[in-house]
Image (cartoon, rainbow, N blue to C red; front, side):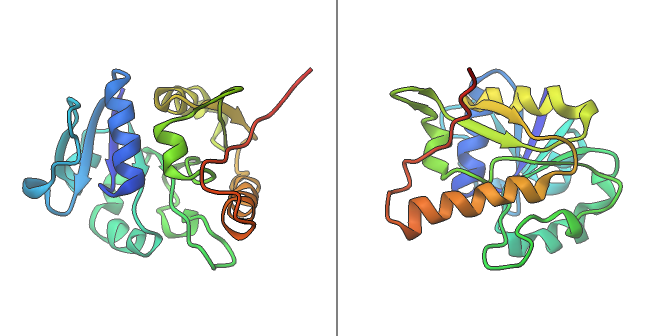
Length: 193
């Protein structure tokens, strides 16, 4: 699968490198592609945001929430009809996801926003892999599951158009990890019997 990871910071770097290591074709979308060494030791490439998005089957938005408007202004037309996985968090806003900022023509999925990046980089705990809860259109569910598994997390589907539910888990993670001081090495698990 060809995946564009728009964003070369902490979260984007972790996701893109993990996906490249798991066999996906990853291109990081960067504002400064010539100066970016985010791929590290992986076969991932770096291109302009426009070029990365143009060739992708899946686009992961892993930029600061304040940059989503700029991304949409520059490549919004290229996002039309594409599966966009929103990993952004507008912390402190009433709605923390970026869905309203994206073109209505995207196939919108919400994932990678409910764990600290270190848990995506090392998703295995003593009791097994961490779960990642996500929302996606039914037709894109298996694709998003494949992307999540490519990072090493166990996908847990909560339905279509349920980004608000996923965002509740973001708030829960922040409360437990940060506010209560339990530390960022904290993940959630769905147990079924």
